[in-house]
Image (tube, rainbow over all chains, first blue to last red; front, side, top):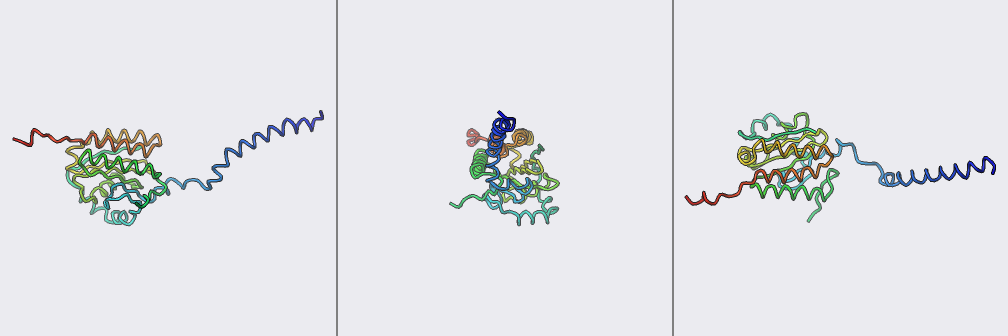
Length: 89
Length: 132
């Protein structure tokens, strides 16, 4: 068997299998298009469960802006004697 | 019923699970339980306090704030709510949620934490004190 023919038979088959597996792995993500947005963008709209309006809502940005602009005043309205805890991860 | 707008943060099933856990915690504890998931700025504790103060029933309310990008969790209790849910209990719940969040399970951590909040704040009615 000539050298060129041997390379095509053995090398070509191997490369073909590798290419096929790569395509099968990448195809689903390519078909989905661009992935999730950046983490910070995903949470740009706050999400309330049982919020001030009493409903599950993802469009509280106007209220949040209002809270942010009157921050110092809101801080003073915190009920005396409240508590809680916090954590970071 | 209109579909729940959950954006890209949670799947519909996850959002329903969180809402159910929140309602269960409120029913078990008799307190108003509220959950806020979003960016909380440079001082998450201050933001959580502001949001808690904006709640109509803030004295008997518990607010759970989760800031996923900032990796911050805050639990704020009102003066009345603190009688049934003290800071030590809040710390335990926060620790539990923190562990789940660190593992990447945001929805599961919230659901489990809310159930724990309800259990810790559970205050069964004392029947023998009703009749002197």
